[in-house]
Image (cartoon, rainbow, N blue to C red; front, top):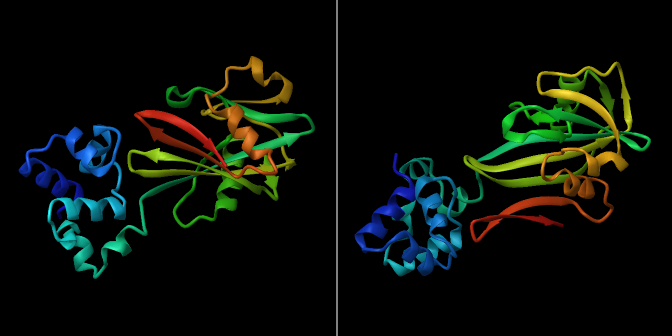
Length: 226
């Protein structure tokens, strides 16, 4: 099964272009973008694909992979969909305190909110309730969706649904993920939290902000809140 990324690379090499030169032709700021397109880490947008086809005199259907053709999809159909990884986080408040997990795993170490992955076919609300139960032993009620976090991942887009509740019952128990602790908001500046917790809480507690997004600009990660 051929891939658009493979075909982009093939045409680039055939025309004697480096990744840096192709990036410039398509209006990208870095050759790393071309690397990600050619290896399938990122999908090329429809407008860039059309520009590529125009510059190199390629019929756009020739770039469309065989699988999609066999399924009867069009190029627009394919790029209405993308690979995503779905997760949830929950802010549990008790007065001026919030429940944090002192996460011990190396990939995301420090104080953070409890949460985890959404299972196949599971509702996002149910996933939030289940993950909180697994990591804290608490039974929460009426978690409200208060924002979305997202960033580009290796396999596509990583999306985190952000929930908040003040309704819970049960005895607090920690898990292998890390120790659960109630902390005052006023203590946060003195804690070793994960890098984005402060900004994440700003979105979750705001009446005007709804989205927390990481974007890559000039090979650097940048936070955008809307």
